[in-house]
Image: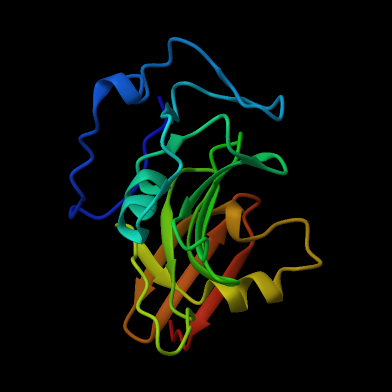
Length: 180
């Protein structure tokens, strides 16, 4: 079973068992309405896909998917106002967005990262529990034409004035000013 790296603080993830299967039991793959298969050892099937921002962030963080609600290849969770969305991908990665801004991502290795560059101005966004906070929008822009991207991050090494981000292929990206 895949381990998801998150900080120790966590939301209460208790849901009515009639609405979902046991989290990560791995007993079956989950087929979405778009035909994509989602691994049962990573995701939990639920019938709820629309809620408050806090609920959507919690569901997204805990790997809940509503197979009947899809967008492209992803299962979609969304707020009642439709401005806060969580996308779950078959490969285990995910994206949490407020309007068109990244709030957080889940890498393919399961690490949840928050975007320091979320700026909707007047609106306050609900963040999931995350392992690290990085300028994900800038990293995505700088890796756009590469054969790797933000979902390929496997490690973050924090330093006093920045961080070193390591991608699955061994490439590194320096955030801030690192003097070694």
